[in-house]
Length: 87
View 1 (cartoon, one colour):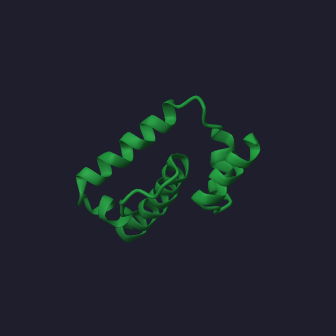
View 2 (spheres, rainbow, N blue to C red):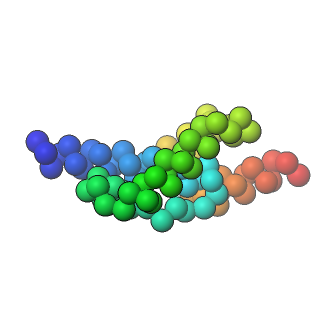
């Protein structure tokens, strides 16, 4: 079913966007619905570039990042924990 497929894509993209936002420490101006619709390719490209940089950054604890996002925690909580652990 096309509608179900679209819903699944949007759900995945929302999680993907959240992961990239948390990893970068700020929210990107992207919308999963518009990405699925093929709108705003510039914003989609920015999202993919940020993800690529995140994937190449060896300083990021990927397991911690993924666990954090799967638990539904926000950007601030992730970075507060990182800053707090260094002091």
